[in-house]
Length: 189
Ligand code: ADP
Image (tube, rainbow, N blue to C red; front, side, top):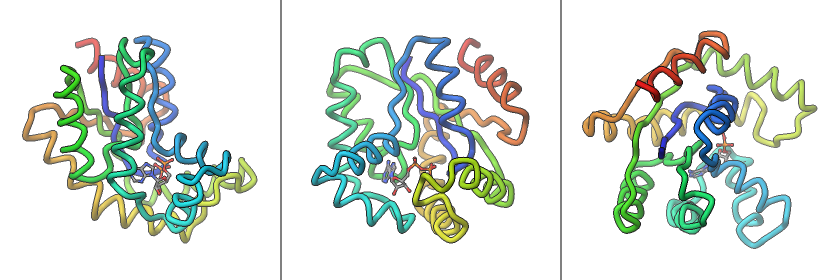
């Protein structure tokens, strides 16, 4: 099973991805985690990405497509994967379709976790407080930019999947286990 988990920063994609990974034995591919790992390792990619991420902007599509293209070709992805934080632009969605077609793969579902902006601010502030600001982009100012970028560049990806009849939306304001239950029902149904 190959799934996209879609939603704004702070929607709970990472939390839900973990449940899906355990239930369906797929691997979680989070471009945010991959980029943070590159930053932590101080690779050339990490050095390039850091400033962009700290500003709440998006890393270049070609770079992201390269990372994902390499990753989905690895053996552990053969049982399926859940994409978290990717695709984030229309060119990324189109690039993903091309890469999947080349590998003879397809997508089973695109699940949007919908949460209003006002709630996202509250959640990110809480996460920043709980983690002692471990993520440089978890602050009100950068979040504002991340949400702007989400609405202008990422949300336009939704109609792309809607037209393909693949989009399913869940209400991310519910309790975590209620969101999980809804996602499981969609994926099992
Ligand atoms: P969020 O919590 O905002 O969903 P992520 O952990 O997914 O954030 O990503 C953090 C940052 O990494 C983003 O703000 C962006 O700069 C960069 N990033 C992650 N995934 C992508 C992507 N698919 N395309 C471009 N930039 C990305």
